[in-house]
Length: 553
Image (cartoon, rainbow, N blue to C red; front, side, top):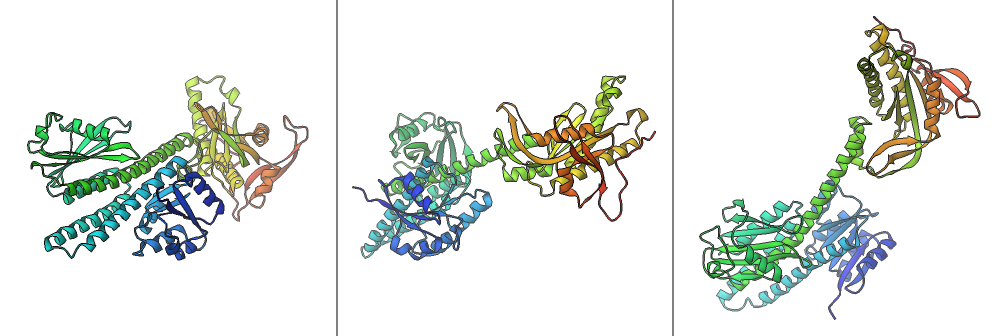
């Protein structure tokens, strides 16, 4: 029976120990636990794990500090650590990498992804253990002949270098950088080679795209270089293919380089899945030795793990960018650019459905618009309506309100959604006053026959807020009695008048000057609603009464 690898789970939540152990299964692994970071560090020598799965947010010593403590210890600097965290920003990733983490797993995690990450890290650990064993065996033979000792020392140096390269590859988050670094190291550790060729599978896993790196550091992408059939043979067989003289092999076709003779192709695999191939070329016949094959195989395995990891993070970054674009497309029509930026940073959920929360609703309707439109050409009517709507929208977005919809000659706005606003009712009041002031300024220069005024109603209360509609067509809106009452208040407001409900007044009573209108019967309610006319904000220097405006010439 194969020796089980030991996994240390570090988490202050006992349930996470059971979840991780259950997902991974005990057939391949044995599990040991630590309830916090300090316990893990103090007992690391006794536990002697092959891999650590460590939570980040823990009391006392957090996951970043655990990484730093262990990675600065010579005895444990090669122990792989996977941080399990709900943090997924690039800054958090950079902090973890700087602390020495080898990989990240973001909560909530997928079982398949968890198993793949654990196996990848354990493969690297197994390679290091094998290299360490070889190192010890080779060190024991240094008493042999001087020439043998020199070769042995060089081999040890190459193995140590490969391990350092593996760590550097795993700390890289860019696939192109991983490919370039791998090619450079391959040419350095195998001196007879003059070119390195990286064939990577395309996103659909079909096409192999060759990139040729020369010893002088140049990089060229070719549609084909003539060794594709040999590469395919190596990938189909899942093993290294060595051709002493490729020009004598019938599987080549139209070689791009006249000096290509010896060729070695090593598959890049992840759990038997083909990622691509790493090939070395030489101008000399039979230029590569068995030691070169061994070194290149180790490098190829390290590169495979690093490429899979960088592709995962790049795919995740693309998905986040798509979600950000979706947020901008959805909310860019409703809220100010500042609010959109904060929504993008918070990455709010865009799915169908809503949640119940308190909001302030503002309805504004142009008084007398129906009779105003009777004798006006449609083109002029649209121009006038757009001018008033533009003024209303400026006032709403100026207070970071959310423009819900236009309804004929009315506009609806909500506050405290999608982002929370502790002073949402006061924002709605300021928006209403600003709306009346902007209209007053417009009337000072507008023709008499184009002077209209808004009647405004404001109410605060619970509503269901979210994306309403279908997957193909949805709108961010609010639904509920709070919306209905705000609409009824607006219907009872005269031109230039702002009516507050009792709830709206209670929320801002220390900040406003009002006129008590008393009970008001509104459509759809059996009992009257107590209302107030908003006069102004309660400031030391009284502002002009913006509820009354006069037209200019």
